[in-house]
Length: 451
Image 1 (cartoon, one colour):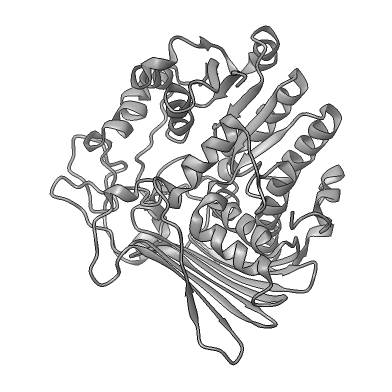
Image 2: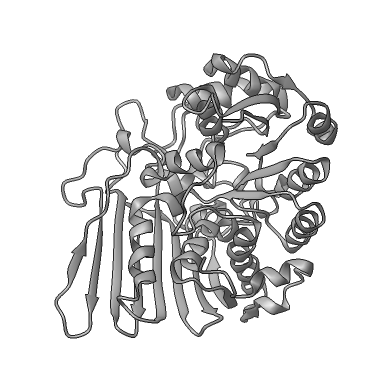
């Protein structure tokens, strides 16, 4: 096996999955040659956490193109904040490297145009890491639909609920500002829109969105009489309540963020009920697709439990997938909980009334329902993380379900959020064809989308 040479941009929490793979299970397939982060303390912590990586070259992100050429980089892994993705992907491609980018591909129309132009001009490969495709439960639903058992898809209902630990976390950190993340319709929901595009083998054509910041934020706190609150959770003063994050109680958060604040001033634990939050916490969409089906979608970021339900209606029947990733948010005596249950299912506390689990039920017309067995997934995101890493670092083998995703898949997912944000502002439906996507408009054709 040829050992590929990698550079990485952004050494925050999400990057640790890739660094751990290169330091361990995939060390024979790839080597980290260089890495960049505007906060040098996070690189220091990551190097101590993964000593097997040795001493990769450190560089300023402004020097990415030069580093790609000098170090003969094969691929650049982009795990920096969302609003920087397009810039780093384009630079990597033009310098002669492939790009591996965390979702979302980008946050706006300009980013879509820039990536599409660079990908087509250079012929380089852009992989977007949709790990939820790889989760066995989602793959099984894909198989059911592709088999034709429920017939031609007519409609989809998709509800995703984020709980008061994971959902709240988006309102503590840089994601809370739409200029950085594009809001949850971009940062979080692009995962979900990609799943639907992939499940039904179609592309979106029109979006009508409704939503607002209805739970978090200072105005909502005042309306509910929450009173004075600490501006952040990791301070000498006691935690305000269960919505406060104390990073001192978590080795990873303390090492990556709290102890590195002196380098750039970034605060990872801001109060979810303070001023300056510009993203929504309740969102609903109606999405039309090219071949005539419709999706109703909702996202709630302050649910008492976390998971999702999806129902796919077809001309011959219906498939229903129900997933509980955490039945309730429980805070221990030290004020700690698992922030993201999908990433660390091994640490989720059992809930008797709403146990964590998954169930796929298929029922055709005039027949009893049957439950479809779901292979057991191991590790984060329903078992998707490990399978994704295998593809990223070793290359996909046989791929009958089309698990791997490129930049065109990233465009097809993110345009739903881009159109949704425009719809929120205009309070009217938005046609995908009316977005200014430049050469990326060709990616919205339905041909080949069910590969």
